[in-house]
Each structure stands twice: as C-alpha cells, then as structure tokens.
Amino acid sequence: MKLYIIVFLIIFFNVTCESQNQSGVLRYKGIVLATKTDTIKNQRLKETIALFNTNTQEVLYELRFNHDESIFSAIENVDIDQSHEYLISKILQDGSGIYYSNIHEKYFLIKKENYGEIFIIKQPNYVWELNSESKKIGDFTCQKATTFYEVNNSIGSFKHKVTAWYTAQIPISFGVKGFNGLPGVIVQIDIHNAVFLLTEINFNSKQTILINKPIKGINITKKEFEKIGLEKRFKN
Amino acid sequence: MKKGLILAVFVFTAMSFTNINNKTDDVLPEDCMQLSIDVQAWYESKGTSTDVANELANVTYVKCMAL
Figure 1 (spheres, helix red, strand yellow):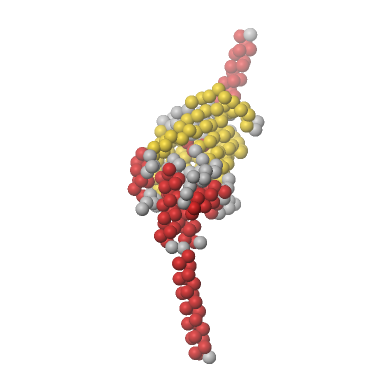
Figure 2 (cartoon, chains in turn orange, yellow):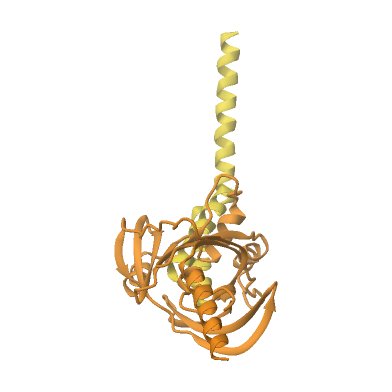
C-alpha cells in the first residue's frame, strides 16, 4: 500500500512538473456582447450603437507563455480582414493592447497606444474567488471563478464582475488580458461586454518560447492613465 | 476649338465645386463631432473606460465624416 502511494506521488509530481515547465501558445476568440439600446432617446446615437452591436466580428487572440512569463494580444497578420467591423469589435473588446505578465510579479503590464502616445500601464493582479460550481465546455470539466475589475471614468467609478471558467486539467495560470492566477487554463471568460473562448492549445516542450517584456513607452499606473483619459476625452 | 476647351474646363470646375459644397451641406463636421461626444458619453455611462470610449468616438467621427 505504501509503495502504491509512493508510485502515485512520483507520477503525479512528474505530470504536474511537465505541465508547469511547458511553453506554449493558446488561442482565443473574442465575441462582443450586444448592449441594450432601448433607453436611448437620441435617434442618431441609437442607430450608431445599434450598428456597433450588429456589425461585429470575432477577433482572434494569442496567449504565448513559458514557465515564467506570458504575452496576450490580438493576432495581427495579413490574412485577417481589417474591416471597419473588425476594428470596432476589437475596440469594444478592449483588445488593442499587449498584456505582459510575469509569474513572480504582483502586477502585469499593458502596452497601449492612445491619445497619440504609447503607454506601458502597470496594473495590480486580480484577486479571484473560487467557486464550487462546475460545467463541461467541450472536452474540459471547468470550474467557476469570479473577480472584479474597476473602471474610473468621467461619469464615476464602476466595478465589473468577471466570470472565468478554468480547467485544472491543464495547470497553467496565465490568462486572458492579465486575468492570471487561476489553478488552470481559462476556457471561457466573460469580461464586461465581451466573451473570450479557448479555441486552440499548442504545447511546446522542446523549445522555450521567448517572451519580450514591453519597454518602449511611457511607464504609468492605471490611475495615472485614467487621469490622462479624462483630460484628453471628447467633450463639449 | 480653344474657346470650347476653356469652356468645358470651366464648366467641369464649377460642377466639381458644386458637388463639394453639396457634400459639405449633407454632413457637417459639428454634427459628427456632437455624435462622437454622445458616443463617448454613452459608453462611459455604461462603465466603459475613457480610452476605449474615446477610440469609439474617434471611429464614429471618421465614419460620420466619410458618409
């Protein structure tokens, strides 16, 4: 009996270590969720928002990771139809940035081009609440986890609930858009008005994927970036 | 012949100016600016960050002016 336990522990330890040591690329698709327009009285505004709601496209993203670091960004290549609809969808998913994470840090970085400048925004890691609820997504048994992200804009302060479904079958803690720290790969995540779904998994155990930390840009905190936004926004 | 050519160029130029003026009458930059401001304010009221709402306002302005 003692021998069985030792053998089991050795196998379990090896599998876990292998998963943790792997480099790889995860692919996601982002889908925009329509916002309600029935309360809008301004007809022109209503038509514009309705157009944004209906003329959407899926946006493809890539999460490249090695043992310590990860980069998450939209896939940019010539094959992608860079139409007006695609651009709108990407903006609505807040998918224009490059998200860099290091497992040893208590924050992650977002490289973004806004207001004619390149910023590197430092954001603290999210704190998750793990839930016992589970569901099957494709071949994966997923567990529910929730967190919040805060937005401070010209109207006020908003706290948006984020729901992630992760699978402990693949113990990788890097996630979509800096939503790291879960005990498994995120299979689905609902963030404000967008849903991100895992579509492809490619592990690369033979070669370590090199991740470059973004360095060129104005280093800034989330709070400072939000303050700049208030000064530069469209206003009367 | 020369007079005819000069007249044709004059008529063509006048027509081009008329078309430009008509287009400007259809879409006023102020209207597009106001729509962009409304888009920005509406998305922010739904809890969208200022930078994202601003990008949507920019796209709205460009699209509105191109119509």
